[in-house]
Image (cartoon, rainbow over the protein chains, first blue to last red):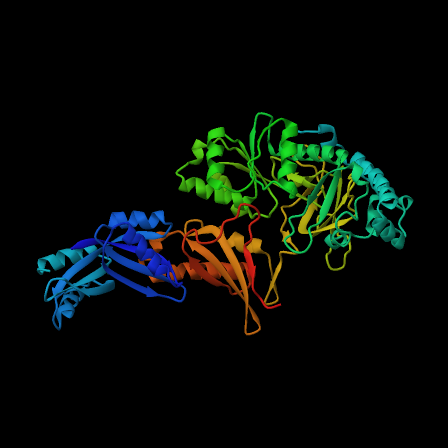
Length: 132
Length: 433
């Protein structure tokens, strides 16, 4: 399933993440998944929220550099080999993953993966066909 | 358009005769009225009749900011307080301010001199001029105020700060002329955009900018953001205030008011006068000032002077835009750097980073470190770390090409660098002295 992901530029200073997440909280949005990595002086915070438009507006109003991207959300089986099965299938079709992050789903025996893929529509088609 | 056509277009030969005559009077005036100058001149063996030609000015000792400080507050005043009608002081941030006094004649001349530069820049009596310089001891605001009033423009003396109100008034009053520092103009355009006000809703047409340097790139950006014709003017309180020199609409240099100020270019190290057209430190002698005359005042500003006639018809010499103040020059790892060079690099990437920046100097292992902080505005680069790192590398490479120095480049969030309503302070020097 194709969903919206929010990317936020974050300066590497203490307390900044707390400030940014509180902007999202005040907008009344709930964070479903997130990932952040950092270099020496900045990071890119990637977020999946329940209302991405609302969160995006709130972040922009607060002067942050924000961008929205389409990503793929895949539900996989929460058992050994669940992820590798999906990745193998994609790799056989020549679809490369730029980055991804995973989290455990609320549903039992299920995990979810968010993937950023260049050829998004083809990947979505492939995954849907394969029953994901 | 001219304000005092006969004086502004005077043939050079006549102008130089006038300068020589005024210079001789000035020497006598200083000997008679300022003990500090009297002592310096007599030590150098200078009397008024020793001055036969204008080039004899080179025998007169220089005056520096320290001379004014040494005689703080009124030691260089040439008239009793009874004749002084206004006192201003420099915006100097270190030590005691440099204090200057004006007689009635000085104020009258000053108004005319500012009237000259604003008319040369294109201001008219039907203009509404918003003065967004800070009013006070600083000469910028009151100088432009009296000059614009003299030509009959309607003055809005709003002073600096309270930027949203500035924008509201600019829009509601239909302000046509803006007076401010370039960095404040840039900030105002940013705030206007945040308020959702487009330049087409404004009537701004002319900017009279001064009191700090500005690169060509920054100038172009302000013109684009505000839909304004940018003109630069020059002055300093020690000499009078604004009105010493200003750009005409041809914009190929700032015309001095040579009948009131005699400019020279010197070599700052050897103190020798340079040939016409060469670059060096600007030195100015005030030819008519009564309150506090200046003999060969060292401005510390680096420029070059052209003497050929301008297309506007003015015969008075023009100086190039100030390249930098010798005081502003940074020595980093032994390399001379002007902040304006860094600014010119930053302005070449308007889509990726904002025009606001900060230069931070530190000492690390007894060596200088230079860090340039810039604000990211292009959110599309957030797709990958690689893109952001590429941008950092690109800025670093450009800086290296211009400065010959490896700078650390730090990306910051938008609008995280301090904005200024007066002169911008871009350099933070934390090096151990």
